[in-house]
Image 1 (tube, protein in one colour):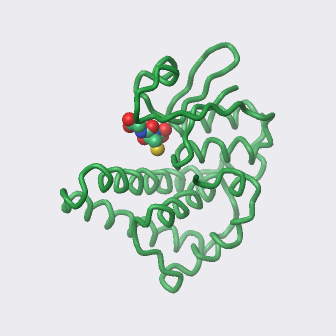
Image 2 (image 1 turned 180 degrees about the vertical axis):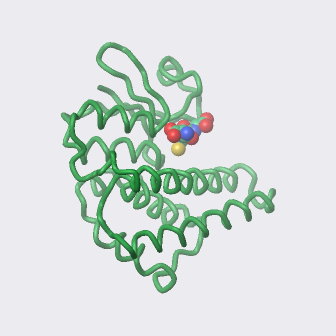
Length: 193
Ligand SMILES: N[C@@H](CCC(=O)N[C@@H](CS)C(=O)NCC(=O)O)C(=O)O
């Protein structure tokens, strides 16, 4: 198996971290720049996006959550990820949506600077609501799961790209979750670069 990825994609990090959490046999890493339409990436994904996963038989999967689902199915177990749990699946939708918002905010800022404030403000407001919802959920139950893995990477991406103010006094449960898992092998090994 081979993953096409780059070092700053939160989506690719979620795929790679999931594989590590599942203790899958090492997956070949193909580092690419999705923004420059490289022929090698275009050959597997006409949309020139990462992550893309290529199986031994040549089959290619794209879209993070589809790849993650496939990895969990092929592992035959989900370790601590609780991927079958409805609460995890429900929360994963919000955590993944927050990842999309943080990424869209970053790319918009990179390409359009300060233009489009209405859209950017809306993204930040939605992200803030997501953070509050996750703060409540984590305060109720702080167990690790696939949604928490996605949430952790999103929080780290928000920090990495300075997307929005993430104050410890405002989000104590999220801050505690972030600190509790920062040394996790799957997260250490995949840090943004
Ligand atoms: N919905 C996709 C998002 C993937 C995505 O947007 N990847 C970015 C990197 S973080 C990318 O490759 N962008 C290049 C482009 O859009 O041209 C997923 O879940 O995998």
